Length: 612
Image (cartoon, rainbow, N blue to C red; front, side, top):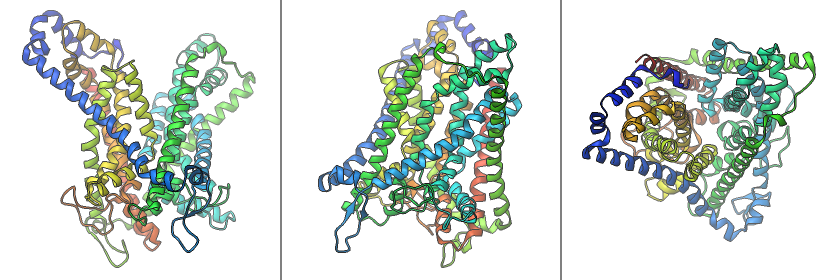
């Protein structure tokens, strides 16, 4: 909830009153003295350096992947690589061949179909949240949908394998694995992102329209149907394109359901995406080989597609901003149209809530009987991974990976958000940083793993380690944290900063004493949610730091197990399905508890700030 000017807390008013009453004394405390000016200058330079490091780190990802993939262009050629359909990395007497056209088409087909399915539910659910839900219902439904954003992708893939794939087999499909099944799983994964983005668009459109229509005696749902929905649909392009970019980078869930066959994509046929290709073959590719370069080239191609999609989203957003409300036509189907839209919104909201409850309920019911204290506290044993013992080293390894990622990403992301909002706002540099963060946020997690592998595992010679895996996760969550922290900072009333600056306070002092305390809960929530995002990541750890049967790490230079990777490896064996349910139970229980704790902390912090 944003702070408005009429809800400025008592603490801020007292601080500003003290400025008016004693400007000289405050100036000496807030940067007027030589020591204060030096402290503020050092803080400013530190924030600038951290923000610059964040931008350079994200930029170096693309440059490193491009450099590693250059041999493909020189030895194979760009056209045969992009337009070829044969992928043969091993020479069986006929030579090697590296063509990724089928992988590109499969990536775009699964992403587009998944986004279309998700949009059908998300648009109706967003309309229900914006125009039809009571505040208590809206809060509950939003919290439920937000839980999906923290569920690890490998859990989606696991549930898709045991539920969606089996449903397709029951309906007569030979194997159950196909493009449509992968799109259905991907649609559920995209639901929280598309719903949130569309709800924000509809809130912005309907804030005044609904009040004006109520004044004129027009029903809420008729106004939502005739005004809010048509206007919002014209402005949904950027949100949908951003979701499409995110869908193309999904790895584990799609890989477990799509079938992984180098075929031209068909609705009920198997296919293989670029992210799946890299994950499956990176471990067998020889360092420095053409096969390795081809995998890096596939990753760079995926990054280029995401960049183009983001550029199109930016162009659509600018075009939509120039359109006037008068150009938006009404839909005139009368009460029948309003009734259909209302029914659609209610069904979509019920489907969204049902997906969340089914996912958590199914995993908890299947995993609870297998749970025991020994399973949580013992190390895995037995000849086959997971048949005996427990998951204690995987829990500790996940904590080490997440902790390392947060130590690297949190300072860089927060500094970048502060500099962007309070120093670069409205400038070309600020827009460039925002564009970089948007592209990085949509970059596939597997590309972050490629960068960590090239720069740390191979470049520094450190091998698979917690540091390499944590660095890959840090690059993945850095834009995630920065975007949310930036939004929290922008929600703080600008009057606080402007009043403090006008009365002699330094910018750093006002940020430290007023602005940052006003949104501490939201900023901490952004960091914590970034940690949960890293907790569920699997693809970056496959060839950077995750190792089966590794003991609990004692330092960042050692390899480690991780809960999502452990779950995937056990599922790939097919002999330890009960233990897979129990591992998924632990993962989702951690997500649920942390989400509740973060939401409670943010709400409590906001209430305390408003009372002070």
